[in-house]
Image 1 (spheres, rainbow, N blue to C red):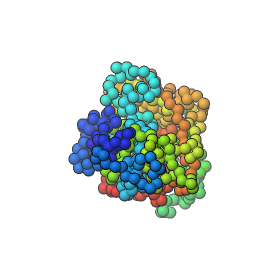
Image 2 (image 1 turned 180 degrees about the vertical axis):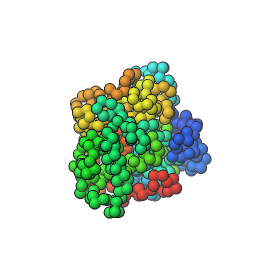
Image 3 (image 1 turned 45 degrees about the vertical axis):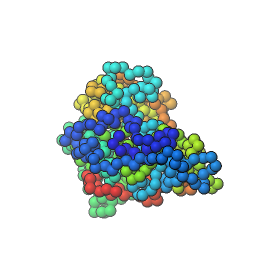
Image 4 (image 1 turned 120 degrees about the vertical axis):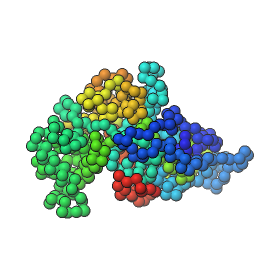
Length: 521
């Protein structure tokens, strides 16, 4: 698969050449360059492979003895090389980002996954695997072939100038992926789907606000654009470290409906708790949104061609190039702890590996190491038409603010299509997601489903979300939090940055300009 894994071992511990678990990979290697509308990397991925280091394949001569260690119990074999600086469990995006960054920093990394493919819970599936996962029988032939589909189990859009984009640029993972912008961003208000203005001209004619409110809104955005935390002359006498977001809105004369629209559709706040908290962080999020919107035009979001499954694969490749060892189809039977309660390794069958730290998603650790934070409902819908009232956009996000439909939490609708090479032509994939609060999954996603019109097929799932009970400094278990129910990566990026700091002891340098492609690790 063009060198995705530097060292690839099968589930039986024997060295073998890497076989791509993703049935769409062959198609990816022959894709054509993107439209000039947008590409983080103007060269197609296949064109860069000749300059990519070859994979390091683990080999062992017939009859050669495996290495032995004093810490290995009698009769137990070492897993791969036996000793590592870090063991990472699960190939979800967060774990792959961490393993990639650690290997770049010179650490010896072992990365294992119980599945035979990259991505874990955030993998992209073809049509047959999608129907099989939800036990929906055989997919109808009218939907097209497997090679046409890359359906994300946890669909999320990427803020064009947000933290995930900076990570992609900073690590040069963009050389393995192509991106295309999302056509539009919409918000639900009083029973209607309305476009979030992307230009001053759109703002002037938008029905989201009245004429005088638009002037106040413009004045507010000018203030936000010029605001710099370390330059008091841009503050206009406002201390955003003490002034709440609600007080800032009121200070500019904005109406409650406008508060809701800005906070939920632009600042991407999940509820109204932020209104009574210091405004500084929310203003920073609004700046990121506006910067992203100005950068690419019709919306602030981008999305990878062929689905999000390429993201963990890209970071896995980064790890592999720097010497990381990958083992797919490998169950982790036990995380091993010493007398002090600190993790020191893992056991898989009759094999063990030891490391200074154990990193992974919550599903690999004992139950007492994590706590539930709620449930997320996701509904994948196959449509034969674009979402109504979105100007027939081939890709779109719609945010339904919770208060608009009598909910505490927002409902998110993300729709992509063949424009991003994730479905057959004429088929649209719409995913509705939210945090469960009604006790009935269908009722939770109903406000989003109602916006879709006729649905050919839908697949609903409910997932419990978890977070670690400790930061890992004592027990050496560094655990990521589950993906949330939003349709963007902003909150998940915060968790990735927190996880990196807990693991490495230092902040990841995020000072790179999101427009830059020169910086590199």
